[in-house]
Length: 125
Image (tube, rainbow, N blue to C red; front, side):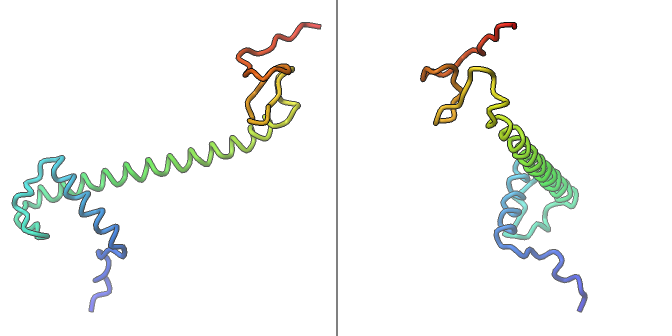
């Protein structure tokens, strides 16, 4: 028996259903003649139409993978940025003169409970 018989079988039923749903959605979007499909049998649809459908599905999967990669990379960069900048912002040495964080972590100026909206002016010495 050939060793490649299971290569095209999905190991996840959820993935198989998602790909089937994507196939039908993409077929509708690009105008594939789905009225020729009988159940799961696509043999009445031309190879050209099926190839176009498959190509569009691959394009969508690549776009989704790129978007996912960008989002995860962005989240990692953002997390690292907040670790470095957040630590610096928490330090009293890096706050503008006259500013402090109240218990709700709002940046305040002076001793009033109102939120600061302008940077305090520093008198030249």
